[in-house]
Amino acid sequence: AHPYFGTGSSNGYLLDGVEGASITVSAGNIIRFNQSHSTNSGHPLRLYTDAAKNYPYTTGVTTVGTPGSAGAYTQLVVTAATPTTLYYQCGSHGYMGGTITKS
Image (cartoon, rainbow, N blue to C red; front, side, top):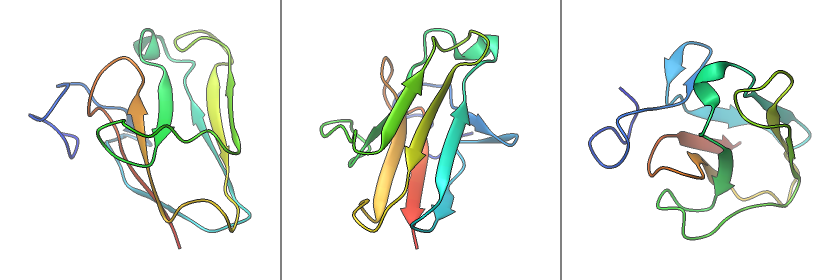
């Protein structure tokens, strides 16, 4: 189960087969969340500076296509100015995601 199971949605995003996986990245990297699988339909991935989704983060974020459709993805370009911790969450449901930590 994802790290927020029981707090919000019982669903969680799978990253390389791990539900609600934590990601660690460095400035200069690009993270691309492939959302083309049909299970992403109705679950637009968004980034926030808090797990409760009070503060959206959009700097360096690109969203392409409709989740659940071929070619859909959300991408983050990580820079020195990117916050140390971000949360990837579903824009439609609470607590489906996990954390992105900048090292």
